[in-house]
Length: 160
Image (cartoon, rainbow, N blue to C red; front, side):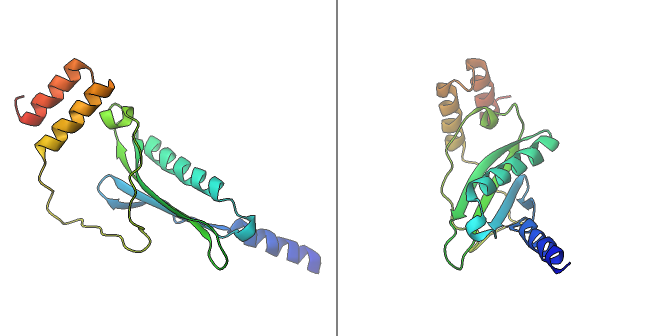
């Protein structure tokens, strides 16, 4: 009987090997998932990362949106430290240019050290030149057709 109790205790402790607080909203349309693999030498950091990204994509799909990665941060497991993976993403419409374009992740600060969230901050002023440059880049890559590019440019310049 003691053996059976020991087996169930071991299974129970292994079941909680990965810390999973879930999806956290950090700003309007911006979300964050953080995981810590407490499996030690039995952990699997790659599977943990894949699960986080899958969770973000499923979360987005339930809302009819697409998850676009903003940043990631990971630390490997080493003595006295568990592997971690942080994933920040935002939701966009599936028909948006961002959803159609493929992009690289931009390195971000370690969000475990400091997270600045300003819900009441005034919206940033738009930089029309930067937005036009982004539209031009999407147009050159073939993500936007000539007509879509012209329509977006007119909208951006207030010529609608």
